[in-house]
Length: 88
Image 1 (tube, rainbow, N blue to C red):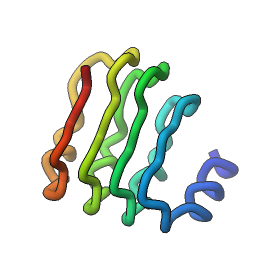
Image 2 (cartoon, rainbow, N blue to C red; image 1 turned 60 degrees about the vertical axis):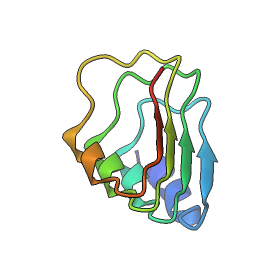
Image 3 (spheres, rainbow, N blue to C red; image 1 turned 45 degrees about the vertical axis):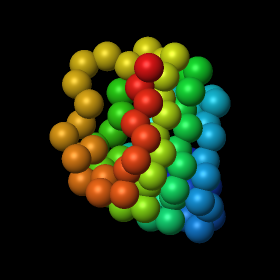
């Protein structure tokens, strides 16, 4: 949605993001190139968008205690800086 995209444009320089009430994860998450830590713990997220693979600075991705189902997007393999992947 356009309002969510505008919010993400405003916070593109943020380095750590904890989202407790954002689902589905919007595709514009991939625009947060400076993002270092992404925390979706304890949410109702059902899937991760392929755009998550664009987060080249991401070192930590936590998404446990969600409603994740199906496969993880192959684009997650693009996260060269990723050190911690915690899907529970």
